[in-house]
Length: 86
Image (tube, rainbow, N blue to C red; front, side, top):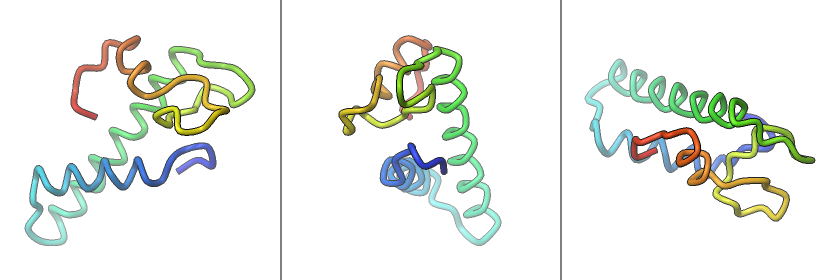
């Protein structure tokens, strides 16, 4: 998690994945956590690829909760053609 990223948003993503996959046991829980981390990093790459720039740099992934955030996650998904629920 980078300083500019929203920990609550990450926890929401992880919670949604746990709810969807309902891991049984430590191995499945680990795999769901890995999936959350992969999706999170994918968002980061998409944000950088779009070249958000600005004073906060390219990694502002918040849903525009910060006045310093250049662009919200929903716009990132739209511009990148990202169609999944996360």
